[in-house]
Length: 235
Image (spheres, rainbow, N blue to C red):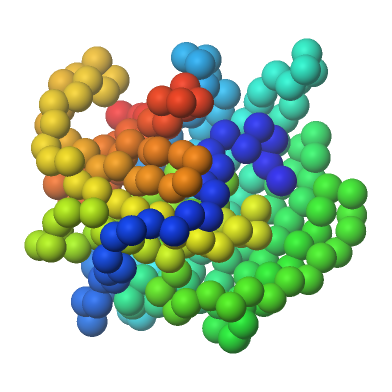
């Protein structure tokens, strides 16, 4: 649905153990910031996000502004997303909307079984779908950068290794599997400064995404080498 669909994680079956964060208390996920997004070394947009921790829920809100060239035409879009998780990081609800050259929207209610997904396409058509999703499914929607930070929060650092997670991409109506692997601390240059960050790799069937986070789990850099995609947190 979104222009360019820069990041597309397609369903895959990973040969790795399934793990889920089982902490009974809310993790310290509160964060806010802005990512500068580029493809092929050219800036194409920004994502401004905020993750709020409430008494029994986590709410991740983001606003993405993008401007890209498609077949010689300038295409603009402004999208907003709102993901609500419970205290175990399981999804409760999700809404997404896009305005610009193409407009569309969707909403997902994960409280029902099966999960109810409602789409309004760019042509104005209504589409209603139901998906049987596991309660602990990880939401990784197209081009929503802060979702990767929430995915990292599910990684069990004490167990290490490659950990598999059930995932769902709302814009693509695609359930499947992804795997997270911690590669260790790594010096990396960001915004002209060399920092030692925790390097993870998220893998799906047709995409491999490198993620770098600080010791608090706050995402600093996202890179997809195959598509020359980068999202760098601004200072």
